[in-house]
Image (cartoon, rainbow, N blue to C red; front, side, top):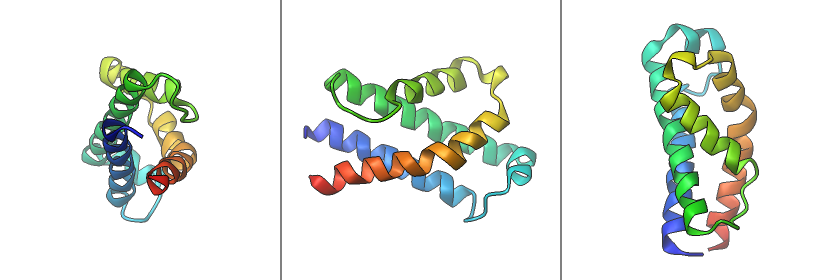
Length: 112
């Protein structure tokens, strides 16, 4: 694996860890929804995850990460559609998709 890809995978993993750290081990949608600073912090980490994924695919278009295109699309939506970001969708990503992505990324990082 190229060093640049490994760095991007590390960045994705770090951003996922940061999101879960921001939530302080508790997953409370209503607290997330009430706390603008928390929402903005998580949105920024999602932007980083999407940009890192975009860079990986630019380096190696055949690199396999499940839902890689959706990850990049989410980054674009958060950045360019900032006024249409839906808390429920972001919460679904946090709850359902980030744990799977973390396992996938950690699997790549362990093999290298």
